[in-house]
Structures are given as structure tokens and as C-alpha cells.
Image (cartoon, rainbow, N blue to C red; front, side, top):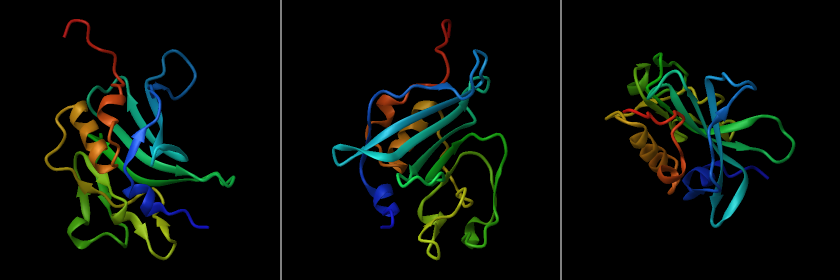
Length: 174
């Protein structure tokens, strides 16, 4: 049975538990942070459906991404990315996939969203690998809190704003 990817994307979701940012690699000086949050759909945790965040401690208020992914439970190793938000990336994204709508061809500077519908492959009945097509987020999110509001809206995760902590330690004097 094929996974109903569109249903997963369009369903209202809730974060289950209390996710925290952790170093992606072992060691106390790990600058690369990762957050994994299980998601509830219809009142139950849906095995394999996750929100994954990535950030760098040394790059405050920029270079953060959140991806909605599905990990198959039938022992396949590949996860399926259903959507991604890149907030204030360090480099531009270039839309050059053959399926890119004409209006979106070229560089996308700044924050952008790799929407499910833009990256759907009818031929494969699955999203395109690595979600190669993105659209600019305008107006851009001005804070991490606004980014979380965007995650809540674009991924339909009602409690994203209240349950996703900042990856950066709080400023003691600021």
C-alpha cells in the first residue's frame, strides 16, 4: 500500500512530547544542533512522521531549517521529505529542476519554503528527492518566534510555537 503523502501533509498535526535541541555529533563542543519531534495526527502519534530541525549554535538567528519527513516502517532506509523551510540560509537556493514553474526559475535569496505541491512527482507518486524547488518567503520572518509561526502554518502543526525551544542559549545580559 502506498503511503498517502498528501494526507500526511494536509492533516492537522500536534507535536508529541517535549523535543529538545541536541548536538548532532558526540562531543561537548558540537556546534551543529538537531531537533526531532514526533507528530500526532488525529489524536495518536503517527510512527515515522517527524519534524526535524537543524541549526548552528555559532550562527544565531540564521541558518535554521525545519523539515517535515516520513520514515517508512517497512525497513526501507530512506526518509521521504515532505516539505522544508530554510530560514536565513547562508547561500542562495537555485531552482533549476525541469519541473520548476517558469515564475520560480533562478536564484531564491533568503528564507524559502520547499512546498510539497511544488515538489510532487506524479510519475513516482512521491515528492522529488531533496525537494529541489523552493519559493521565497515574503515577508521574511524577523525572529525565531516568527519562524515557528511559519512552521505552524506551513506544516499545519498547531503547537509548534509553544513546544519548539530556541536552539541558542538565552542571553544573560541582553
